[in-house]
Length: 219
Image 1 (cartoon, one colour):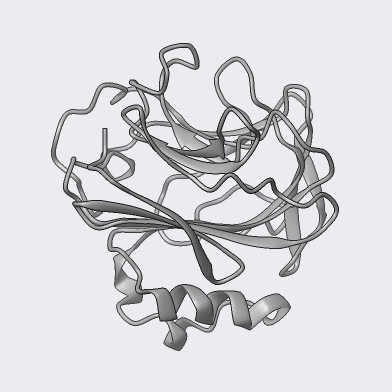
Image 2 (cartoon, helix red, strand yellow):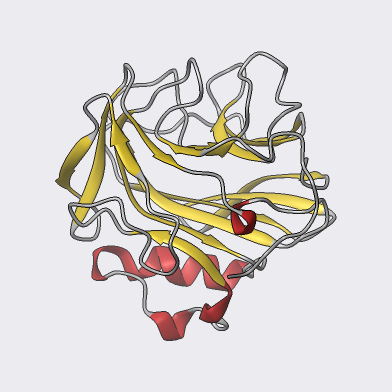
């Protein structure tokens, strides 16, 4: 396993896909959720987006051994790379996805919960990438993925979270530092979402294009 050895504020919190701890549930679908232990370059993010429904070509992303976890949502919540298997809770299910099948969430309380693991906790200057395909069916309450212990502390407990800002714009939060795009997700369309952190800067991408950045280190 790839270990990221620094204690973070929410070290015992599970990783949640589709719903934050108490609020911000996704109404829609998520597919091909993946975490890398390095910051992918812009051209690599674009290559994943351009692969579309054909799925990610492993040769399109150099250094694939740096993949930490990959939840493909092929009618299970198993991690295809490591042992960070998830559990569907509160009625979360599956539906046709961008690539094969996808996780399905009802916007109320559905969630895929992944237990805490050392390689899901990232040190402040550790490099990382998170990417996925998202298909929201409504605006508002958007939470795609996150590892945080508290929804009511302005993100101070977040090691990382992809969700929305106060205007429902797509954003990345770590330790209370936001990279906010000001752009809402488009309902009823598949969109590729990615975030990179390289130890100094957060970069947020949608459909292969960078839409926001902010200086910061992981919380």
